Image (cartoon, rainbow, N blue to C red):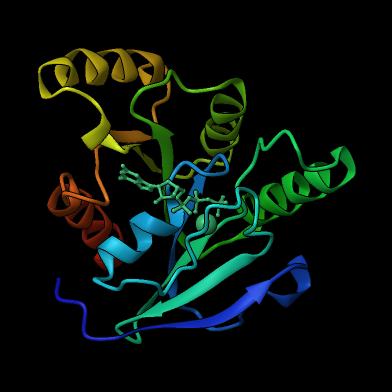
Length: 198
Ligand SMILES: Nc1nc2c(ncn2[C@@H]2O[C@H](COP(=O)(O)OP(=O)(O)OP(=O)(O)O)[C@@H](O)[C@H]2O)c(=O)[nH]1
Ligand SMILES: [Mg+2]
């Protein structure tokens, strides 16, 4: 799939503001600072469409990007950032859950975990929701450029084992926003879900 256009359309802070268009959606889910915005920019061949910052926890809304005037990428607020007050953290969690639970046109969720670390409790809780709501997801291991190449197969094997019990997990893919590793695999997966009949 060739990217012909990509634009930011809206930031949603309240579940009632979700776009009404019937476009299919791919949502990006992961803890704060894991590399969601960088991955979206890489997929869309843009430098700074999705705002990537050195200030973790900055993305507080569901950010909608319309791609090829055909489907949406949704950058979900990063969870698990300790410095954010508890009250705000729980309201993000609620917004994310309401979104995952009720969004009919949600075709695929991309969960990002750091290549160098095991999935956190929150990561597994989130995919627990996906499993419960029967939403297919793919796990992306970000920042793969930070791992020695020789160690990658072992890390991938461990991550696959951590997700083995989830029947809605479609694959585990190492990815780097710097080298572009994993981009063709991830794009292929996204394209298949966007163009599927239902
Ligand atoms: N080496 C390396 N650094 C990366 C990669 N992806 C992201 N980063 C860096 O990690 C930091 C966080 O990246 P973001 O893309 O802003 O992360 P995010 O998940 O969108 O963060 P929030 O919006 O705060 O939740 C930035 O300093 C990026 O430059 C990668 O593939 N490799
Ligand atoms: Mg971000």
